[in-house]
Amino acid sequence: MRCIGESWPMTKERAYFEAVALKQHGGLCPEHVPEVYHFDRTMSLIGMRYLEPPHIILRKGLIAGIEYPLLAEHMSEYMAKTLFCTSLLYRSTTEHKRAVVEFCGNVELCRLTEQVVFSDPYKVSEYNHWTSPYLDRDAETIREDYLLKIEVAELKSKFCERAQALIHGDLHTSSVMVTPDSTQVIDPEFAFYGPMGFDIGAFIGNLILAFFAQDGHAGQGNDRKESTRERKE
Figure 1 (cartoon, rainbow, N blue to C red):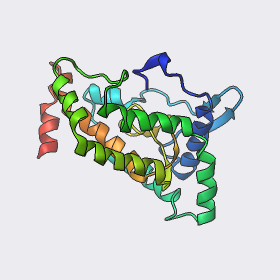
Figure 2 (figure 1 turned 135 degrees about the vertical axis):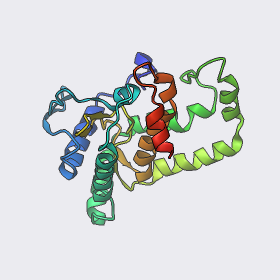
Figure 3 (figure 1 turned 120 degrees about the vertical axis):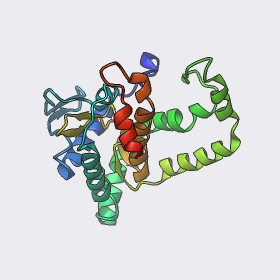
Figure 4 (figure 1 turned 180 degrees about the vertical axis):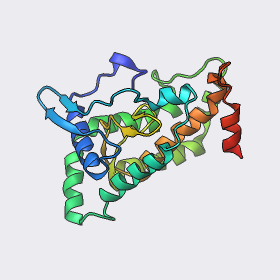
């Protein structure tokens, strides 16, 4: 959404859902979610734990070629606890239905995800961006692939209809702050009850993109080849 800018303003009410999700996920996995101290709904203000240096956004660390040996363990723990404990695998039907109802109000941000993830990339849209002219043919191929569109439509249906667990809803590498020893998940403003696989797939997909971008970020001091070779082996 950031690349679209001010032409696509988002509702202030998203702060409420972000605060509630932080509190609920923090209660289930306090090791990897910063504590919320105060929330003012009228002011859309969240007072929460300051993630002091050397915490940085994970995406910046990956671009810089920094390795995080505990990241996989920490993110696995975060997703296992938050997804399992907000699902019917753990909760009663009554508890689950009440929780689903509360997050149904985050409909505007869900609509944005539906459009940006499941609709716009597969058609001509003013919000689409790619490296032109080098990827023009690739973008056209995606727009003309009707079998792909059928598969994406099925995924969109699951995203809209399967209220499995309280998902983060926007779990990319800029929604995580890290040090070599600490992993903190932030910014769950897109949170709602959806399919567990959306969070898992979004995060793994971001790691795959980061992996294939390493050659482009390589510099004299860190050519990235050693770490890439180790992972292939």
